[in-house]
Image (cartoon, rainbow, N blue to C red; front, side, top):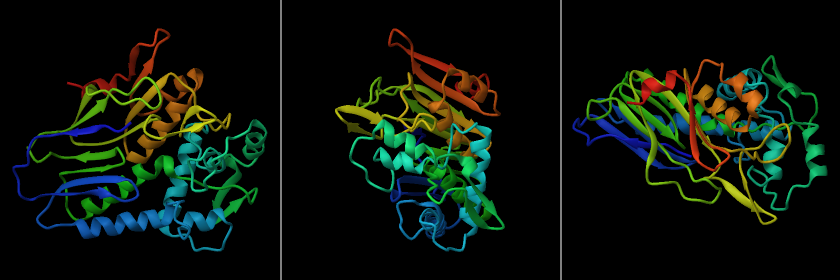
Length: 320
């Protein structure tokens, strides 16, 4: 599920908008005395050349194939953050789930056949963030079959890289939206806080989202936001719709009454990882994760199939 942007018409000619579809959709709005589009796309491409598993020549692809490669700084930064967040979430976010993601047909290796329980048990033997580490800028694997996929934090990390570039150019008023993960800073073109609508997700996979918003968030100062949900990315396996979010403990696509999770965190990588972690977590794990330094807005279905909301006290200050 992706939030929708809400703001009035631009009144300041120094605001620029860069939008399009590349690795995913992107929309970057910023206030500056000159157009920075070329520089934005340069850092965007540099980042994805490091961590895009769908690019056979990316750094992460070389690592997954156990090929000799010099690790670039962006890959090292992404790896370190991924490992840190995997530990923080007790493995609910796990960047080594690549074999499971591939097996269900959502990864960089197309696997159209249905996943069988036996093969999943086999794949799970080399899934686990504790099976890989970085030592002196070299990847060390306990098992050569361990593979990485940073997609669960990729869009959030791309937001951080672009925001870092914009701030380095002196930009203070901007919004970076990549695949629905966002960083908002300063004011929008109307001089107001950036406003983000959280759409009401469908109750079932394959459904269409409602035309209404479950909530509208008003982001003042600087805020990083990410949303996870399954209804935008799913496939049919043996006649059953399966969402793209994989439970790292069972190896199966997660089955949950949680429809979407929106997280506001100190940075967009943390927001992205926790949005995924909360979506896959069982009730007991969920309660442990909700003590983290994040704000959250969870849309779920109760036993009577009615929409329900669970949110942090801190999230309420963004809803007015």
